Length: 254
Length: 221
Image (tube, rainbow over all chains, first blue to last red; front, side):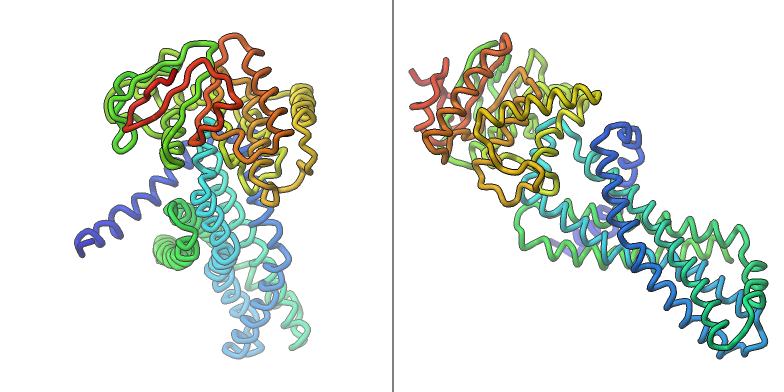
């Protein structure tokens, strides 16, 4: 393959495939009325968004403690309002959606690309199509929306646990009353913060889902291509969430 | 019901023509496994002709929309050699998948279908747990599950891919009996057997037998 061909494939073909997959997912939304499609969706939400609850809360609590400790070191004990503000900015604006996306990539994105590539190699997708079942409706669309919903759920778990962990840590370690931080937090927690966090988590979910599905479906010949597809999906998902993060942050906060 | 008119598909068919009429049974023997797999894709519209015409139920599959093609596929039951089961669904979910996907079944209808499924499985002496994932099953059992799945759809055309391969004489006899009964159960139903093993002819008595050779269907006497 020539250099020109590689550039064309990476810059034009691959992003078009990602966008086309999402376009088809939206086009196939009416298929939610089909029971097996709903079942696939609910299973994915359970796997990505519910089973991860405990781990996400755990990570959130500890992340909250670490962040508030560093902020308190920086601002001093008397600046409760400022500390609360920074906590909101760091957790709600940035870390919540980002951590949720990273956990989703590690747990669900890899699982989706492995599952789809194995199904393709074993000709299961072909067999599904032979039965008149549209693979895009049955396999792809529910995964895309389940991952996006799960990203929102995980972001919520993380943010709640991190804020709670942060405030509890200050009360326990430095004996500072809850109200001192909550005042700063509540004044900084505007609707813009919440919408930015929501938009980020939804778009991260779509990004991870499309990258994982496209890379999973690209494997068709050999089982040895599966680990390569998973690695590619993981790296590209990380890349795409950081690109999206920059775009959304610029749109909302500049 | 199925018509091929001078169909050309690169590396598979070279101006191949043949037809199967309503209610008949037909065997197509291929020289190799890959040829058989490609042929199965042709019969399900996964591979379209480069030139020529393939018709199912008098509809040219090259000119129908994707939705119409999927509707046609619902009338064609496939029994893949490896069962064609989805590995992340339990055996019974696999069997029920096309029915649940294509038909909005009521609770009573689901119950009736499950009864029918159990009935066919009993006839096949299928004694494995159907609430488990299919990974642990031997290939012939996966194929039997695929057979039950195809039959429950009540298709007008049923295509058996190496259906008797590797079966013991006892189970083979039961499968042949079920296949014969199924063929006559619905008026006009077509049974098509694709295999690369000529020994199939010892067990299946078909109305016509074709050999796929050099990309063409040659009828055998």
